[in-house]
Image 1: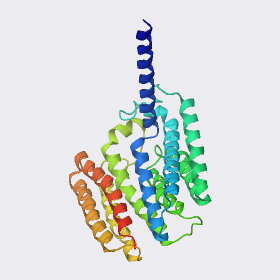
Image 2 (image 1 turned 60 degrees about the vertical axis):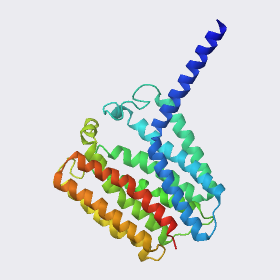
Image 3 (image 1 turned 90 degrees about the vertical axis):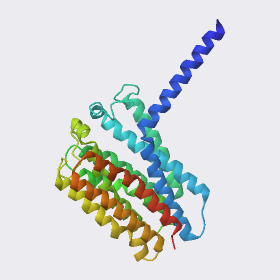
Image 4 (image 1 turned 30 degrees about the horizontal axis):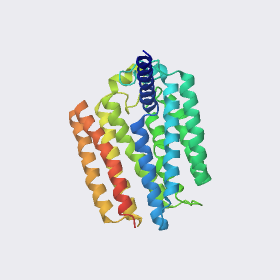
Length: 303
C-alpha cells in the first residue's frame, strides 16, 4: 500500500513539475527568447573577433544574463496583457490567463529574472547592463501598452527589439566604444523587424482584433499595408550592404544579403499582389530565416 501511495505522489510531483516547466516556457516565450539570445551571442562573437580573442566565460555570462533579461521582459508583457490574452486563441492557454499561474507568481519570477540578468550583464560592463535594463523598460512600459493605441507600436517595439545586437557587441569589450559596427548591427535588426512584425500582424489580424491590437500600418489587411511591407524589405537591402560598404564585411555577406533580401522582397510583392494570409505567412517564415542566416554569415565573413 505504501508503495502505491509513493508511486502516486511521485506521479503527481512529476506532473506538477512538468506543468511548471511548460508554463515557464510560455511565460518567457521560449522561442522568442532563444532568438534574442542568439542575436546577442552572434554580435558578441563579432566583437570578440574584432579584438582577436573570445572569452567563453563572458559569452556564457551574456547568454545567461540575456536569457534572464529577455524572459523578464516577456514575463512583464504577459502580466500587463493577461486580460487581453484571454481574448485571443493563440494566447488563451498562457499560464496567467489560463489560471495556472497567478499574477503575483509571474511578477516574482519576472522581477527575479530581470534583477539577476541585469546584475550578470553589469559584471561584463556597465553599458551592457544599462542597455539590458533599458530594453526591459522600453518593451514593457512603452511598447506593450501602445499595441492597442496605434500602429506606431511597431516602430516603438523595433527599438528594444534591435538592442540585442548592441548588448551582445558591447558585452565583448571591457571598455566598449561606439563605432559603426554596433550601429550597423542595430540598423539591420531594426529595419528587419518591420516586415517581420507586419507579416505576423497580417497572419494574426483576426485574433489581434479580439484584443484591440492595431499593428498593421492601416490597422487592416489592405494594399497600403502590403505596400509598407514591400517598402521595408526594399530598404533592408541597402542597409544590409553597410558592413561591406563600411569595410568590416566581405563580399560573401554582401551577396548573401542581396539574395536573401530579394527573396524577402519577392514574397512581400506576392503579398501585395494577392493580399492573402498564405502570402503573408511566406513573408513571416522568410523573416525567421533571413536574420539568423545573415548574422551568421556576417560573423564568418567579418574582416
